[in-house]
Amino acid sequence: MSRIGIMGGTFNPIHKGHIQIAQSAYEQFDLDEVWFMPNHIPAYKANDQIVSGAERLAMVELAIKDIPYFQSSDYELQREGNTYTCDTLKGLTMEHPEDDFYFIMGADSLMYFDKWVHPEQITALAQILVAARDHSTKKQLLNKITQLEQLYSGSHFHLIKCAEIACSSSKLREEIHHHPELSSNYVQQYIDCDVLEYIRQKKLYM
Image 1 (cartoon, rainbow, N blue to C red):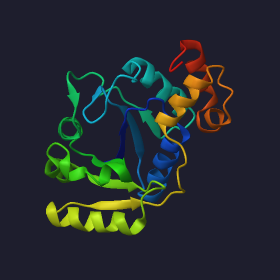
Image 2: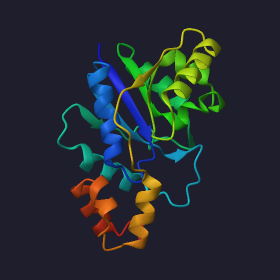
Image 3: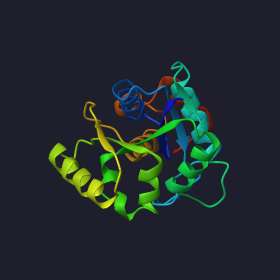
């Protein structure tokens, strides 16, 4: 039996904040692996600026290549239509019935978790690990967790303790667009150098 963290997201592009959250979850919840799983078509995001699934998966693989307990997964990229976490977890638990799953999300996602498709199925299939964003306070998160645990019987939500994350994929895309030579300090600080070289070669976000 393994304890597997699922790090879902668009990863458009993946950045060091994603890695930091996954590393903190791995250490604090005694996970055996963390699977980075890019979305196919994100159900809750406009996709006009999203590069291809193959490109996002390639960037993930470059970003995590030196960390043996981090794995990339194209599980959601292989599916048709919108990406729903409940369906992903159903499939994973059927394929890996002996494993325990921990779904990793940001605080912004937690605040509207009850609006997701079948949240009651998600909480039945995985424990939820929540990373605080800098614009959310611990008190707000704890209040929301209390509300959700009352709403979904038997659910388990946990806070991931990690440093404030000062970067976002949207800000990185904006910086790359305005500095296509990739000279921005912000971009160089938060994107892995191999990922940055891939963005340069493919001319992504420019």
